[in-house]
Image (tube, rainbow, N blue to C red; front, side, top):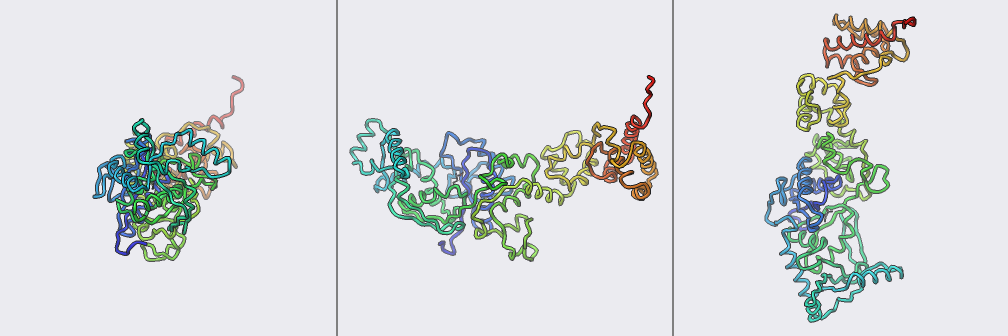
Length: 499
Ligand code: GLU
């Protein structure tokens, strides 16, 4: 357990081998909230030991994604790529000298050794172990090679790898989410911790980093739980104290069967931002993937949160803690995300939404030339939008009425003649500024409002006609009604069969 006065220091440690993933963003958010909650430090460390797969583009995408979600870091690699803090560099590729020193220490203390077994030999051993129903592990051939034997191999040009001596017995740790976890160390075998002094592997560098950066809590996806005993063994050998661990649940697909994949929705944060999901809505949605506040916890308004699901980040900072992170996988539901995003869009001022539409390039350039119209469109449409990107298709009829079949103007319980009559009556009412709903009362709602709505929108489903009218205005409405009447005449005028 941590001494009470010791500062909480957590880290987010992405590998820059792809775009910022939903799961990484969620884990980043948990680290961020935990650090804020406990007035600690959250740092970002780039885990780029896999040089072949690490790219500058991925790193930029990850930094940018976190920044856009409002997940900020106090130390480490900042969103502009600079590095800040006294424990740096925060990029594993720049810490090779440090890792080398610790590898050398383990070699000198005979806690690690060079292994020269060939791939063929190792493969054969693995196969025979598997055939005998044993779990495969290194048998320890090179464990006690004499120093001169090692040197002789090296002189021959054999490079060898570095393995750590794994003790027998069990190793326990207390996971803050999972509870007590116990591993049989014998199953691990002596692990390779480095390809060479200058090429350490993931489990080794993480241990050195977490210790030298004084990390108090490792909060990470539970796909890493099998790495934890390995890391504990390495830490023990180095004489390091270990951080507390909290393994947070994987994100499952909506059906709960298997991990979330592309079929459930995109897995990259960037895709969601580009589609017009608001960062605040994403954060609110992400935090509930594996965590929920206790109903008795108090919200910012001082009352218990109950089963409330909408939270601003300032509130999450006061509510979040690891004790309410769930063990079981968290299901990803795109419907839920859409619902959240819609709720967030509803709450925004139309003028602010217009700004977001412009900044995010969500609507055609021509629409921006009619700024006042666009703002009225947004005011009417915002309650229907799942994403800002939806506006482009949902609202294009306001700017330009689509071609439509004249038969759409005819309400299902009526006929073309009635549609024509009602549309004429609606036209007069609009011209005179008369009360349309009173007229609808007289003529029948469906009879009057259906043809009017279709005349104004050209669509089977749209906002109501009066809403559309307030957006497009009287003049444009009359033009659209006239064109609808024109279309209707093709249905109501008897055909001249003598032609
Ligand atoms: N670099 C690892 C990853 O991206 C994270 C390792 C850790 O959190 O310990 O999955």
